Length: 631
Ligand SMILES: [Zn+2]
Image 1 (cartoon, rainbow, N blue to C red):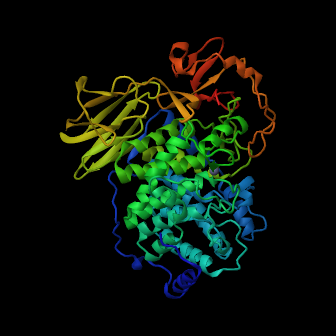
Image 2: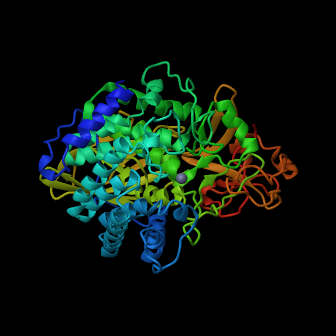
Image 3: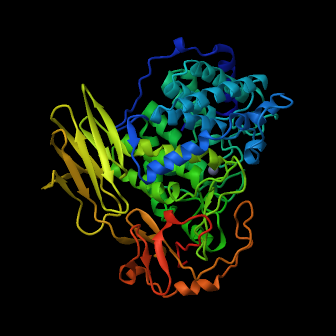
């Protein structure tokens, strides 16, 4: 792929600085994307969750974040901008150190909550915080900020109808472009990914994660059509990494990082997230290179990086060979940067569904929905969040990280909100169901509107039912993702109680017929125990699954031998060997079905002695569990 050398970069800088006036909307070209989506996402507001696991979690998150006081959210920024004694109090943690690190993601969340619920308080909060941030940003000489503000301003425009957001965006990106190309000696800004010291764009440099910058810039281009945004996005493309996945056989470990936290392997979240820029580059430019790289990366992640939960990136958040991942199960407690790495994977999977139309990419979304997003314990006051998931085979617990305002506190509401996007998709002729959760969707279809209401107690039942509302009889297909965990007999469907045949296309089980108002479609997806193996060559370690759920062992007789965790949740303070764990030795994972008996209506099972097996997502804060028993 094309790269700028130093001389070319200088020339580009000259062109950018001398020839491009401040972008205005009149400059917008009539944008035509080279690739269009095969299937479409629904918009926020078209899908409503109904009471159930995902709805409850969304409401909990909405309440939590709506209760954060505006003055606290702005305290550090106002102080930095010169206020002697701003109202409110410091949030602290990363929020203080990086001056409102996650404010942009929280404003995005308020915008999206408004788009979903119509709650004016969410809109008001988003607008007030943006206006106040902008005042501080201006007083600070319009320096710093980071690429996430681009998405925030796009959200304000799209979801809150703030016309001025695009003007702010224009100023913001122009400022950023100036900073990159001009300020060879600008050392003031120590965290934005655009500063001059980063333009060398070291491979794998996760001290600044510069390679996440192309994604929002492409989104800004697609929204506005300003060619300079496209060029700027192109400048930040991470082809040095994408190249390794673009052609078979892939070569994932042929380069080592030259800067960053761990110079042996690359940083997990940001390297997966970079592929969301590849996705937009594919839409804009149409080069199959980008899509091939995304597809190959997805498959590789599923086969060689992913824990049973859908999580990835252990040991200070790194992509590494699978043998090393297995080692971390005994030595580490930081197996998955739960919120941020989920966010990157959700967006990648969503992009792959829309660009290919294939249902298989929804499997990762479902695993993460139950074993990462819904497996997260409630946030503590002060924005403390479950940052790492711990899968240590000597026993593990869930805890919120002691720092406030971490990156994962920023992505936490975004991942929960995304249930609304990831439940349904559509093309012209079909509506597709990716997640099985109580909800409604309004599908605007030419002149008609189809409403689907999904009623289910999944995953505690293997059945889901849809009620169809149409003004007059209409022909279309309803496609249900064929889940990766399907066991025994195939999926079956009934319309108004009568068996009906479906056909499978692109991984969707499709019932295509003339639908009448009030029709009911029930679908059964046989669910049972199965095993998820981490190292496929070695045939272990193994986690017990039930449908999409990771099951974890526990017992009131077991204790976790640990002292306090340190900030990074490394193994310090934990015993290498946990003698209590021997009580689980007799469990034959390959014959699990015959060793358990049901003990509750939420997929809890009793084993010999007082040992229990239950969904990982249902473990509370501090409750001991074992996901992997064998190394
Ligand atoms: Zn994070």
